[in-house]
Image (cartoon, rainbow, N blue to C red; front, side, top):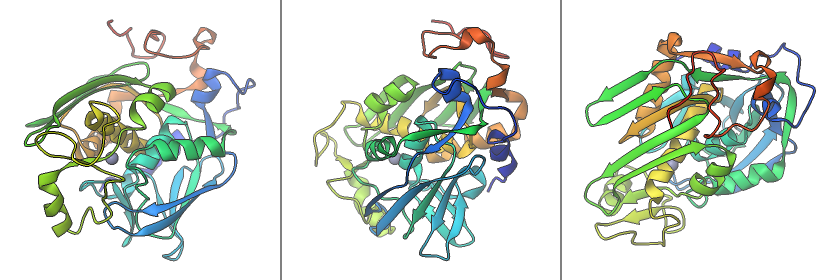
Length: 338
Ligand SMILES: [Zn+2]
């Protein structure tokens, strides 16, 4: 698959002086971060059904996010696009024949906390599904604490429209001062149906609106999935099953929980760029494959985006960024229309 480790490396590049004020917004956006202390969690993988123990450790600046299979000769699999080995139902990374699968919910929590450098040790092939959402990982990493590091990070900012048209699946990325998702799903044959979510993704909106949203599937697909050797760890505790009338096994956390989960998956998959991404992403019938194709398209079209560095920002931008604060100062950006 794609090989562009240099891109992630560049995003994590060190060498510029760190900012003096450790708590301001600019610092959080443009300084690399890791966790303060190691943390751990265990659980089954939804597709393999295997119990896996996971330890998350701080890592030095520039290291990036890396999975380490302690049960397979400590082989390391970096969380980047070059490592993607399968996108069927979950995002799987691999090196040689050692894989780590279903990385997306953990990575979504990593993304939103602005963590750049971590080692994730695993003694099995799949990240635990836990309750099927990103919430347990968000709480785990928040409890471990976030530590700024003495190295700059860069943000990959979309500067011109990128469109991917795959017939019934479609995606468009356009410039935006932040991460904005406009996600539409359309599942026939079950109560999920068509759902649309528009959200400015920041720590707060993610915690409230995306992190709790759980994995889901259609009842008609469960048997087929298990025949294919997937979904073996799926249960009422970690996956919402929909038939044509509604959720059959659990109460919903949101009426539109499925589309919220898809948006969560997108945040997790975007983490594979190795840098935060700014843009407005309109996604129709998306999934891991389409998210991945977008990232591939960005790699192939470096003129559609630019690296933003903290030391390029004028002082007046030193304030919290949100949907109501169009950043007209950004290179290539116009203020978004209301
Ligand atoms: Zn998911």
